[in-house]
Length: 114
Length: 112
Image (cartoon, rainbow over all chains, first blue to last red; front, side, top):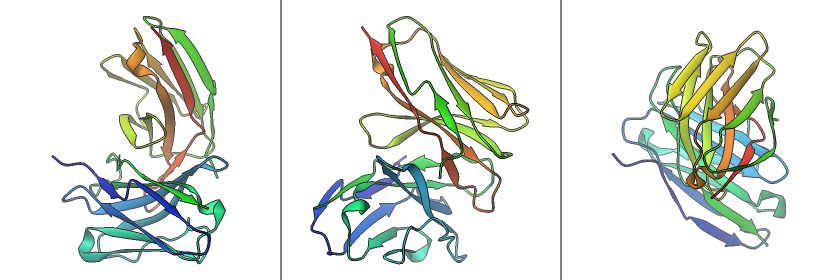
């Protein structure tokens, strides 16, 4: 079946602008995660959604970052007033419910803030 | 912050040789997963090993887990040029959301 998809693949923006990144999880997966991969910080967790529960936002680096998940499926990560340090690859993953399930990752969105 | 470290950070071998990558972590875990990443993009899942398992195989891959030492290893046998990639271990620390904490990765180059 189809895997996790993300759009856009690449995004170049100017400092101060807002950006939206989209993730389409695998159909039927109730859990959705956003991670960020940057040169300085490696791969780090940002936010987690499980079903209709309130998201776990403990990994978001600042209040400029927010995410939502509509209808328990598609998710959008929004970065407001982008800064150069936001430049990174943003990865989305989804998995079935259950603690021993594998997380499947999308291809990522490469964000460059000029 | 990263859970642990992987070593080596970089490994270069000839095709046909075996490659061993190690991962150490700090907290108790629910499971440990290994991923491969090509060209800095999406992560491909390789193997998940549960905390009560000691060894797992998948094709040319063999993963071991030693929870007493908080370490894991990934062995790729009979390597191929196509195995060239970065390899990451990720731990699920049995938190409520099962979010993963990644190591720094090992960059493997397999020369034809």
